[in-house]
Length: 112
Length: 112
Image (cartoon, rainbow over all chains, first blue to last red; front, side, top):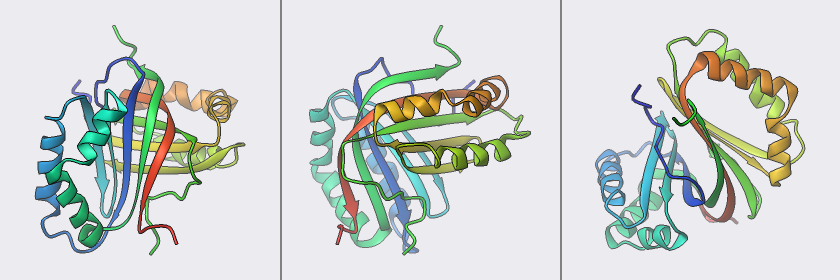
């Protein structure tokens, strides 16, 4: 059992950034930047995990953070700001980014 | 611009149920039940929208609700309880369900 996309996260409360995206046909550079940002995010303070699924032009990526300050700091990271600009200008026809406080969770299978 | 998977939701605060799943190889009945549950969810009080992306055995579905009571009521809906049991017994090798309060959002393109 690998768990696939499912991230192991601690007991709540913690924070989630739900990033739902519709891509443009211009995907030049997208895969490399997305992979680099995922690796860079994982090095930031308070990073708890990331889940990402794409199907064609549609994607949902959820990253988890220990505190709101941690996710705000990642949002202001210099390399991340460059990637955000490229995303708005080139890669994303539309997106919604939602910052949410995780209050309760349920797991399957039940935690041992 | 269709927006694809991206749901249009009101200004926060509102609630999100982040349901991240890893499927088993047994998918008999899954697609029909998933479609029926999505249609049924959309009829419930406080339903704001749903976003779902799957790639092979991995999936992320996020549903949005006006209040925590609304999402709890949906979780206790009789037909939904039957589907939940089938999910645990047959379709999902692993899942995490996270209930979160959406505090802030950012949209692209910017709202008109």
